[in-house]
Amino acid sequence: MDKEKVAEAVKSLLIALGEDVGSEGLRDTPRRVAEAYAELLSGEGKTAEEHLARTFKSDGGEMVIERDIDFSSTCEHHLMPFFGKITIAYIPDGKVVGISKLARTVEVFSKRLQIQERLTSQIAEEIMRCLKPKGVMVICEAEHTCMTCRGVKKPGTKTVTYAVSGDFSKEKRDEVFKLLK
Image (tube, rainbow, N blue to C red; front, side, top):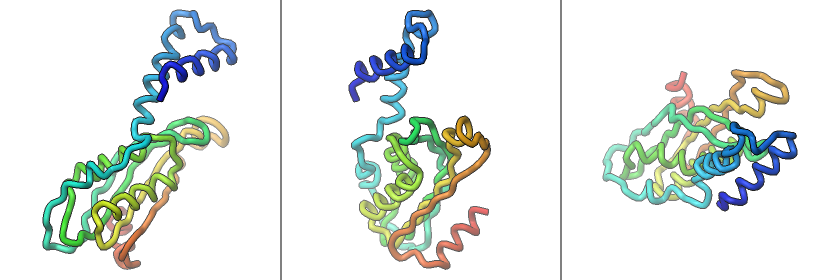
């Protein structure tokens, strides 16, 4: 990311909005916004492979569920935040990963311009690719500020998406949904 170009673009936007970019409150805003976007989009071009590479042998084949992983992301349609919780369930095939690594995987994909449907699928695909479990299910529930602060203005509205890959039977899916209630 070219922070100088981002700062210049923000300055141009403020001017186009009729703001005085020389005022005390706005003088450093272009730089601050550029820094904020660098952080918000820090997952661009990264994969979660480094986080999912270290595994531990596991003889058990029962499902592992990590629920309520907080995340925030930036909607690529309006450049506004969306945020919520992600649950990851997977069925190991002889190996498991440290639980913090699942949360780090969420961070890699949420810290980029995103849509919720793609975010959900990318997490599932990367876990399948790196861990090679028998199956994985990712559930994402999020509130989109592009819907709560503008447009239809419906705060509290949640969007739920999920992605399933591998051998994740309907019974296993039902089990996950039941545990989440």
